[in-house]
Image (tube, rainbow, N blue to C red; front, side):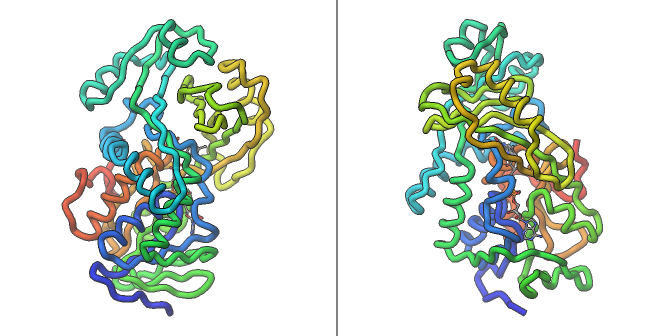
Length: 371
Ligand SMILES: Cc1cc2nc3c(=O)[nH]c(=O)nc-3n(C[C@H](O)[C@H](O)[C@H](O)COP(=O)(O)OP(=O)(O)OC[C@H]3O[C@@H](n4cnc5c(N)ncnc54)[C@H](O)[C@@H]3O)c2cc1C
């Protein structure tokens, strides 16, 4: 059995090398813990690769305050995180603040109220201003919500940069190592069985995204985390053709700096099936072109699907298992793992290391009521 080396803050084992697992590893290693991270494949290839990288929930006012609290904390830290990673690894995740335009949400009053309460820069704009804000958008809408402060990040690059950074910081990454069984003895985590052997540590954090529910299925109080497929398409346009993240009826466009444009996404409860479908490709392309006619000139370069870690109301599970000492989870971020990631990782480390928590932790507990 591989036993962890000793460190000031003990040795922590993490299952899952998506954005959540890698951000958590980074927090812990920076705090002086020894960290081993296992992933059943290469890190950063699942939902964290497939996502859009908008650093805001869609329709943020419709979420619980517990989601807003994590989002707000992360949003304040993302620019520094991105620039710091670019400096130290040479991989630039391209944090870009190009704003979020939300067309005719239907609940504008709630949005405005939420913006005031949470001090989020958010304004209601007219049809004319929509056209000025995003000239490529063929709009018939007469109002929208404009959130100028919203940024995006290239999540595949973020994952690559995080991997390089945590390796530099001393995290032991074991790829192609599948966690198979979590062994609990007398109410305490003792070891993890994997396809390549057994691992022991002072604590185990499950950050296995959509697979977290399965991994914890045999423990008491398993979290309600299930896969939710999302399909996305990518157009290769010229830089500047489309400039704003624009959302309407739950479908959004994300223009990258180099002219690549993402359009998505579907929300499908199809279990662990990660295949793309022709129907989604056609539907997404048709909606994208009807909103942005200029896209008819450009090819769809890619089409993919990812499995979001769905949870009740998108409220993640962050904290210790109520009945098992040494067993933790940081998972279930559903549609918002990128925007909630830095805060979730900081909170996870606070709880594990007994530090003052960045936000009140109760809403994210395993046994919290999620509504
Ligand atoms: C189409 C789409 C669009 C999205 N857009 C956005 C957005 O704009 N903004 C935003 O904030 N969020 C967005 N999301 C959501 C976001 O991508 C996820 O919430 C986030 O990536 C979850 O990260 P994670 O690390 O928990 O999961 P993952 O990235 O899925 O990582 C889990 C890891 O665990 C590993 N693993 C699983 N089981 C085991 C095992 N038994 N042993 C070892 N390793 C294991 C996997 O291989 C994987 O690497 C989007 C998601 C999708 C699919």
